[in-house]
Structure formats: structure tokens, C-alpha cells
Image (cartoon, rainbow over all chains, first blue to last red; front, side, top):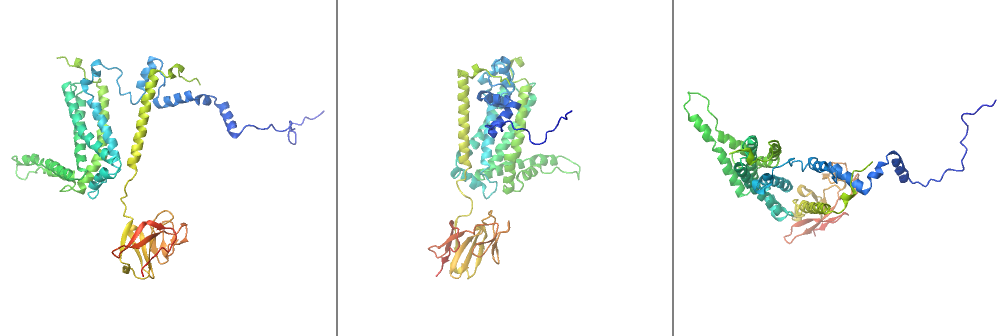
Length: 303
Length: 159
């Protein structure tokens, strides 16, 4: 009876020498990947690669074949999803809206971009502000056209917002169910005007200085309200309303006169606080357009 | 994995051609905008102090003087009849060195230099720069920081 040796001692018998390994490390890796996930190589073929990148960016097929895929190209796209699912024919006529709302949005975008670039040069201090504004004209490449873009876009935006308001009025788009969006629009117009006013001080030239002096003086005229209330017959010893205009003016300028405090206040309001607020209102304004049933229609208000 | 694409739709149809052309125009526009931004972003002028500045008459400095001009980060030294200007920017990582009894010490990482700006203690490996000192027609001395020397002893002799 022989005992079978389960574990042979010593090295296993040679089978004629080790196989010459022709594969480099990269080939080995590729083979390993192919064994585990062969679709990787399918996806790396140029057409499939392009299609996969396109689909990951746009969330829809690059080559829509069916009607459903064509509409998905709209619904799934961030930039296109603002378009309504269906639209009335009259709303496509350019002269119904003159594109004024979209135009003011574009101007706001342009102002944001040009304003961000201006912030690279501008310094909000009474010593440097005027010099930096002049440097934009002389020593910064494209600085003059950049400042011009910001200036003219700001002026145009105020005009376009005003005309947009006229259009909304004449087409009756302020009526139900869009009343609240009209209110939002009025807030947006006021924010646009305040942005224009705060930006007016920043060049720190004579025009800016005296314009803000006068503007703050107008705010000071709110004393008229408290003065008139205090002039009403009242029992002796009754508390009086504080001078509202003086307080507003003090809060606005941070001082008695237009100076460094006013400049830094207007700067922060102009570049940080007001743009964020107006962006939130613009987003809500646009959302309400869709939710209120798209653009107004003559059919909605029977004469 | 089956890929959902249609060979036909990838031919250069009119629609695909226009789409390609539009994307090309947008791409070219973005490239142009990036180039314009680069040009705008590049500083054309310096707001720093001028590279040439006057240090007054040579007689302002007594023998052995070591005067620190803080806003220019330059130390004016006089050894005998010779006046030199040594940069006070540490050669290690650019901190401003402080004058010390043995020369100049850097407060950031402990580099030490002797009176002529030679390294006596690391981590700095290179000695401090010397700047050109020359007289102007008025008789004042002027330091030109645009002319700098890596080796010491670039004095201006009074005599």
C-alpha cells in the first residue's frame, strides 16, 4: 500500500522553462481592463466617446431620432428649458415685446461681466479712485472700451427697463394673474436705478461728487415729512418724529459730506449687495413668467 | 454596451454643417475673448516705487553708516570712502531682512548675511543683491535698482 504524497516537497517540475512574456505592463493593464469591463474600449471609440461626452454635458442624445428625443433636447437643457412647452403665435411676433425684457437681462449680464473686470483695476479710496479710472483710459489694455461698455450698458439698461415697463403696460400684461410679477418688475426697476446711482459716485470726479451730494440732499428733503407731522397739533410733551431726511442722508453717506465713507458704502452696495439682490429678483421674475402662463395674450382680456 | 447613436445623423448634412459652423464661431469668439482678457489682465504699468531714487549728498553718510531706506527695501552702507546699496530682500523667499550687529538677518526662516550681504547662515544660498550707485549732475547720489549685481563690492568711490 503506497501513501499518496499530497504536498510534494520542492519546487514544481519545470514544464520546459517559463513562457517568454511579450506583454509590457501597459498591455497587461489593457488586457486586465478588457477582461473586467470590455465596454470601456467600446466607449473609447471616437464616435462613442464624442457621444458620451455630449450626453454627459447636455443630458440628452446628440442625435435625436424621435419627436420625444427632440423635445427632450429642450427640456433637459439648462439654457433651453426656459422656453415654454408651447407658445402662442402672437407671442413670437417681435413687435409684441420688442425683446425688451430679455434685452435688459442681457444688459445686466454684460454689466456683471464688465463690472467684474473693472474690479481688477478700480480701488475704492478717495486717493486712488479717480487715478484708477484714468488708468483705465490710458494704461490698461482694453480699459477704455471696458469702462465704455459698463457706462453705456448701464444707461441703456435704465432706458430698456423703462421701455419694457411701457410694453407691459400697453399689452395689459400687468393684469391678473400677472399682478405680482408687475410688482416684482417695479422692484427690479428701482434696484436698477439704485445700482445706477451707486455706480455714479465711483469715478470720483466732479460730476460724481456733486451728483451724489445733490442726490443725498434730495434724500435729506424727507425732513418735510417729519416736519409736517411735528407741526400737527399735539399735546405738550408728546414725542416728536426724528428728522427722517437727515437720518437717511446720514445712513447713506456715513458722514456729513460725501467722502471716503460714502465711497466705500456705495462701492460695496454697487458691486456686492445690490447685484445679488437684483439677481434673486430677476430669477423670481423669470420663474413667474412661466408660472403665470407665459407671455400675455390679447385673448385673456376680452374687451 | 450598445451606444445609442445613428450613423446617418453623423453625416455632414445641412443641419450638422450649420451646427458645426455655429459651434465653431462660438468657440472662436470665446478664444478671442480669452485672449482679450489675457491682454487686459496683464499689468502694463507698475504702481510700485520708482526703480531710481536719490539718497542725497555723499556727506550725509558717515564712515561705517548703515542706513535703512524702508520703502525701497535698500540699505545704504559706507565703508571708508566707498558707498554701496544692498538690497534688503532675502534671497530665500523674498522677506525683508533686518539690520543686525553682524549684518542682516531674515525674520522669516532665519537666513543670516554679513555686512556685505554674503550668506553666513541658511536656508538662503545666494548673497544679497547690490545696486548701482552713481552721482547725478546735482552732486546727489542716485540708486538704480534696475542695475543689480549678484556679487558684492559694487561700491561708488567718493574721492
